[in-house]
Length: 483
Image (cartoon, rainbow, N blue to C red; front, side, top):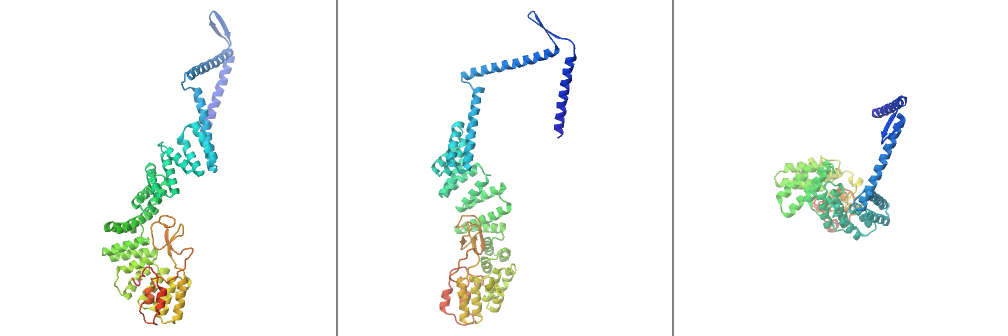
């Protein structure tokens, strides 16, 4: 605002000065005499000013004519001139207009028009680095993958478009299902642009699918360093990668690497169930049972899971059912209202042959959340309390058709997994498995094997029919009460 006022003031000052100057010239008496070649011209002050203006305009016109003649001479001699530059600019303008039309056609989904305009732009501009991408994408849209690959390979020749070319070839290989070649191309693209967000996501997904855990960690660190991922998400993914690396090390017999990776995974994500289980095993092997129990307690408080209970039982494998029940009180108290805690309490009471205590621990879970496991527990409780065989069979019949309850489910595609793994088998997504009930429940045809020892354990009560035991068997994980 202030600068605008200053400019207005300056303009007014100049106009006033010119007006005063012109008035002074008009009011000043006298004349201007020009003598040249024996002749004289007498001019008034105003006439002198007009003559000077005319001479100035004439001089400018003459200079322009001379400049044009000079440029014409250079043009005839083949040199670059303003005239050639004029035609070059016009050609370039038409080329960029064609390129713009091609990009608009590409966005509108008109592959034929996009290819036509891109070819015209290439002819006018002669710039493959500018037009190659539009031509490649137009070929992709038209379904001509051979042409698209050819255009992307052309882009590799220029360092400015090399990244675009490599990325385009990588996408083509991904569409073909050639993940190995796509991974190699992604690594080349990463070397060119290590901070590209889309590339980092693609590279990480490919490395995790190919179980290249060390490479995936490098990509993850680059993503966190570039602030493309929040730090807490980076820690969680780093924990999953450490856990995956620990499993590989265990398969290879590298105990030291397995121990370090397992403890690192639990440190980064204390509530990750498989990491807590493996870390507890490592601590038990190092004769640190109290620390192992602390690790499992912390994970149970956030995510109660049968694997945590089994690992908790494995800390002291030879204890009596009564001693185990007492030791598990600290674990159950970490999440007393969770369904898993109630099921675990009922299992422990059954193992100690405390059938009323098992019924109390289970509560109304068999009615409010009937699953194969809770209903099988009710059958065991009823049998232990001496209920009629028909009543026990009724509970078992309900258990056969009941849903299994929580499982490892991919939150992206809904695929159900029998055990936790870093990468979903259904969609290939990384770290998307959650312990929850699937949306579409699959009914179980048999009671889980974790309940089998409770049902066939020699307890006081009616004799068990061998046919019942055969109906109840199924493969599964041992429960904490019988581990």
